[in-house]
Image 1 (cartoon, each protein chain N blue to C red):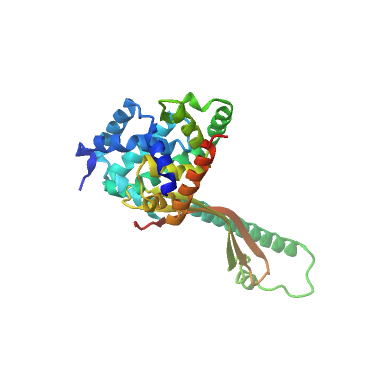
Image 2 (tube, each protein chain N blue to C red):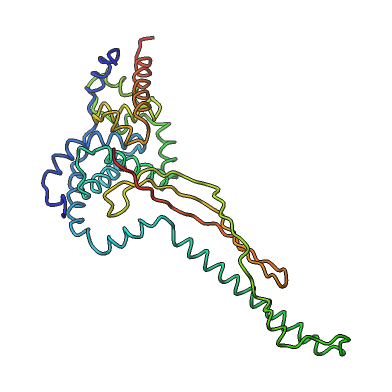
Length: 177
Length: 163
């Protein structure tokens, strides 16, 4: 580095522009305002920020899945009832229809989980941050994923698939040097 | 323990680091007012958490992080600023208090450096951070920090050499 000592000396002579006096006032004001900052609210915020997943997206995803399942179940139930009505109004069948109780014992809405995938299609490192109330910096990584859940009805062979985008923010604690 | 706010030494500490912090913030945001906002947020967070000023790498890391957030949040404005800045003279809001032509040339050469070299130079020269602290603040290795610094000086020397 000796080759550059003269240049470094010249650079050090350059004086960065000074902050405006207003900045000092603003910092003072902000420090005063945060006197009561360690409060329950802050603790709650920290607990939320600490959780490694974005619970909102997870909640919305699960709610959407539940609604779809409910909708599918109702639709299949109606279809089942319509088929029964048609059978009753048609001429007498050659084969003896199964008793109603037997049909009811195989509900069309009996779907069982058949699998799920969670494809991460984008991961972005958003650098170091201080989560509110945190003493230590954390590295924030944002994952964008496409989650797909599948259910299958073993009786009818019908399958139901719900797919939705999801975003997860993971906070990784960074240890100091 | 409730920190800081009761301490009166924040002003001394801030006076010491603010010019360097502002210069560092202005490596991302062109407007001095925006840079002041970023520095204020970072310093208040740092001070409120009662961090030791010896651990100042965190402060610079916070400034960088807030500046990057600012750019993302305000991408449209940043683009507009970048366009305006590309057309305008950089002396509208100078980064340095210049005393003569030599200093003007040096400042101009400094501002023409690639950003990764410039940020290491700013942290080393005007903020007196060690390479270890720079590495921590920028999330790079110590060797990378040292080599970026060296490249910055080489490039500066090249730019300033008489043709």
